[in-house]
Every structure is written in C-alpha cells, then in structure tokens.
Length: 313
Ligand SMILES: NC(=O)c1ccc[n+]([C@@H]2O[C@H](COP(=O)([O-])OP(=O)(O)OC[C@H]3O[C@@H](n4cnc5c(N)ncnc54)[C@H](OP(=O)(O)O)[C@@H]3O)[C@@H](O)[C@H]2O)c1
Image (cartoon, rainbow, N blue to C red; front, side, top):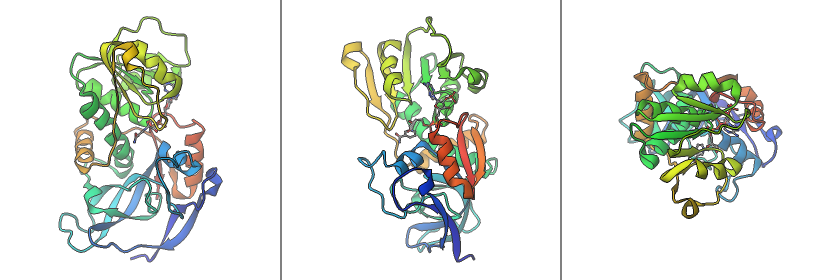
C-alpha cells in the first residue's frame, strides 16, 4: 500500500491561495478508525468559510488543516475491533469539521461510526454529492420541519446543493413546493419537483400564497423576507452560517434552526433513497484534487450552481 499521499492543506487562514496540495504520510488507523482511500469528495460552503477564517467563533482549527467534510471511497484498512467494515468496502465518509484530517486528500482516517456502506446503485461522485448535503436536507425536512403531504413549502435557494435536495424530499412527501433560484435555473428546479419557481433575479412575485413551512438557506435579507411569506403559526426553518434576527413573536410564527450533526443512520437513509431513485444527486462540476484551491475560489465567488462541486482524488 502507498506510504505517501497527496492532501490539500493550509497552515493559516486567508484566500484560496493559502491552499497547497502536499505529499504527506498515509496515516494508520487506530482503535475505532478506518482508513479510506478517497475517490470523490465534495466542496461545501463550510470549507471556504472555515479557510477564510469566518467561522472562528464556532471552530478552532489545528494547522495544517486539510479541508473536506465528506466524500466516498474504499476501505483499505481497519483499526482494531472493527468487524462491520472490511478492506474493499465502498463507503461514504464524514470527517469532523474542525479536525486536521479532511476528505480533500487521497486517504482519510475516519471514525468507523461515521462510515456508511454504499448501495451498489450509487457511484462515488453521486455519493460524495449526497453525504453532507443529504444529511442537512434530511434533518431540516424530516426532523425539524416534519413536512407532511399537502403542506405548502417554500425553499430559499432551490438550485443549491442542500436546497435542491430539500425540494426533492418535500415533493416526494407530497408537499406543494415553491423554490427560489436565478431565472436561468427555473426549469432545472422544476425538474427537481418544485411546482412553482420564483426567480430572485427576476421581477418581484406578488402572488405567493401563505406557506406552512419556509426553509431559509441564505440568511440576511432573504431571511428577513421569509416571515411575511408564512401563514400564521407557520414554521421558518433556517440553516445558515450567519446568525439571524428572530422575529417569530412579531409575525406569530415558529422559527427553528435545523441542528445538523453527523449521523450515519441519516446518511444511510439518504443513500438508500438515492439508490431507489427517490433522490437525485446534484453535481455542479468535477475537478481534480490538484484544483482544490480553485474549487474553493469558485464556490466563494458564487460561480457554482446546481449542486455540489466534486473533487476527484
Ligand atoms: N451545519 C449547518 O448548519 C449547515 C449544513 C449545510 C449547509 N448549511 C448552509 O446552508 C446554506 C446552503 O448550503 P449549500 O451547500 O446548499 O450551498 P450552495 O450549494 O453553495 O448554494 C448555492 C446556491 O445559492 C443560491 N442563491 C444565491 N443567492 C440566492 C438568493 N438570493 N436567493 C435564492 N437562492 C440563492 C444559488 O442559486 P442559483 O444557482 O440559482 O443562483 C446557488 O445555487 C449555506 O449557507 C450553508 O452554510 C449549513
């Protein structure tokens, strides 16, 4: 087996140029750990926000930091005491956000409890696009909002990685889904299951009926505009890195933050829904690992649309 690997890393906060792809030793799994050879990893907003130093009040990083929260690959070695997984298994992995080891590398050491076997129907790129985005969408829709058939649901950012999966899940549950996106993505978002689309770069939409649930994935002015879209007693569910001003009492609605924590059972359920064709992975583009810095630059610049950027390792 290889003793050295390529890994994207940075040793200080800053712009994308602080990322380099270095040769470092392949780590060995300790008790409870699995060594996974990555095939595909996703690049998420958290990766660039963390690198830029915007999340220092939430996470204290140890440098050098390898970015990457999730991905998919093959188990190559298991630490002592692991019988559930074996070398060769195709798996999805989650890496803790603040740990030094991320998935933008050829190998990652993962906590065995956060390694999920992949269904045969899913390829590595699709799986990588679904891990953290699917986890976030599932928790927001199923656990926090508990969306039901017949409800009116509005998704702010229906063309994004998480928003697109929320659209798909809510439509599958039988909700009447409205989603926001740029005008050029209207047909794409309808294809995900939205019955109605509001173009945020188009003319103001006057006739949006009151919604039972609004998902805010944007924060700021978009969050503020969500309150007036809700029916009395409606539910505003938010998941953004920025803090919000809670105006629930003023508008007579509920406001809840979807608490996203790594959960292998949820990821397993998401993979199973995708394997059955209920969910479609959304892949914006695929870049080689050597372009880890460029991938983060594109994401931070708002150049990524229609799902996740994937790094092929
Ligand atoms: N742990 C957590 O709490 C957690 C977990 C996951 C995600 N999040 C947060 O959830 C948010 C979305 O994550 P993501 O991974 O889905 O991001 P993403 O894929 O990068 O989302 C980008 C999308 O935002 C859309 N957008 C930009 N401006 C918009 C506007 N004014 N109105 C509506 N849509 C707009 C764009 O739509 P167009 O392409 O149509 O322009 C783009 O597709 C981020 O803020 C992220 O930090 C939080």
